[in-house]
Amino acid sequence: MFREVMKVSVSKAEYRVIFRLEKLGYGQHMVMQRGHTFLEYRDGVRGTWTDIEYLTPYELCIFIDLDKWHQKSKQQLRDERVSTALRVRGYTVKRYLYSYDSRKGISDTKLTEVTTDIIAVLKSKGYKPTK
Image (cartoon, one colour):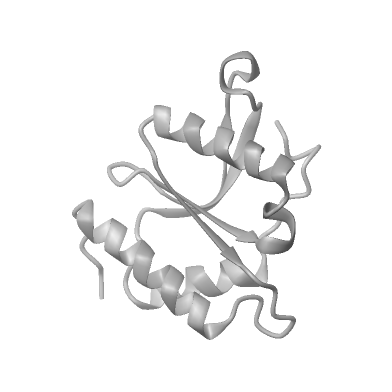
């Protein structure tokens, strides 16, 4: 698919969010770096890789994006097309921008903000944490 074209890897920020969610009991049904293929003539993009995704029945796609790249207008257009294509397919899409911290990847404040919001969305979808 796109893995040959896109250099996809898990960032420090994504790892920190994933570890925090797992520590709080929100690791079940979670997968990382899941690919989605779209029809370019209909959706405007060929596909994407979600950073974190909660599978059925929660169907939540999470993108943790570095603001340096995702504040550019061309990338914002692509992000919106990807979000729209996923919503049409029944997913809830959450995007979080963060500023890079060379030691942690994402600041503690932003990490708390992101995980709190993800947990609120999951609870609204009926997710029950495991402990």
